[in-house]
Amino acid sequence: LSLHHNYIGNDGANALAGLLCNRGLQDLMELHLSHNDIQTHAAFALVRSAVTRRCRGPALWLRLDSNRICSASLSDMLKQGAMSDSVCYSSRGCGKLHCAENLR
Image 1 (cartoon, rainbow, N blue to C red):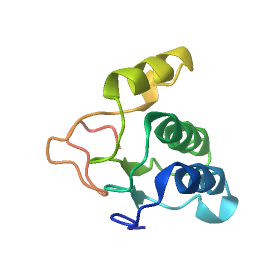
Image 2: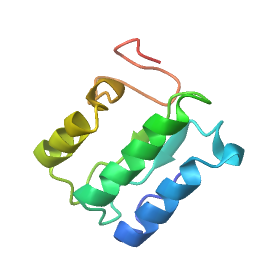
Image 3: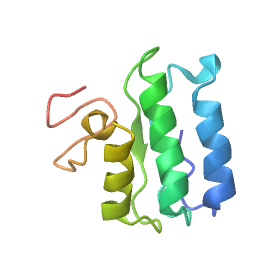
Image 4: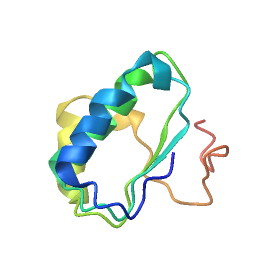
């Protein structure tokens, strides 16, 4: 699902985070949210939902590049929530159907 360049912002990202846990979206493989003015706390909500839904479906390729996300803060939030092992930060030739790290 490509929603990049749509000025979704934090409110929209939080709404999408709630929808990710919906059973109707459990087969979603990619959510492209680049260039949407999303900040760290809303990105955390998206990642938390993506990790939660993984128990019921495939891994989600969540693209959040070119937003207003502080990587260090997000990483700290993930560690505190015991989710850091569920997130891959690699960008080495990954795609929605291929993981360069063989995690998918």
